[in-house]
Length: 207
Image (cartoon, rainbow, N blue to C red; front, side, top):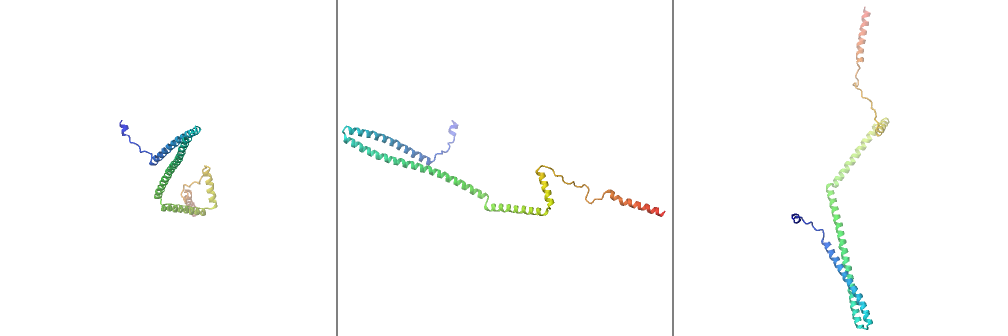
């Protein structure tokens, strides 16, 4: 019980335009029913007038035909009213479609405005300028590298690139462990041996 009475009623999705369309269609249907009833009645009165003429009751037949003529005019008016109602329904339905289109355009316009607020024209121009600067800088580097490398270097780069592409390893020359310009120990001892040899020779000549 508490859940039933405590449940919030959802807002109705039926608009005033929907109610108007429903009322117009109901009026149209009533007129069509009236039109059908009058048509059947006219058929009966036509047969009755024919029978009255056979019976020699011409005046009654004429009166009945006059009534039929009046009802024919009512049928024409009813047909016009039905046509007007259907035309009105079509106009309202088309206006509903146009309103939905306008609402969609409004939502799209608001979305575009919010996007423009997030990124202004100045931001776009700045990003384009920065992108162009990066492209120009990279172009300058490429030009410098292209001018600094010899044909042999270019060939070596291509070979290494091909090896990397094929998943091969390119062996690089080993780095020497001894410091550049270092003198070996044997070279350092050579002057000492020469000095000792020369000393021995001088002593022998003195003796």
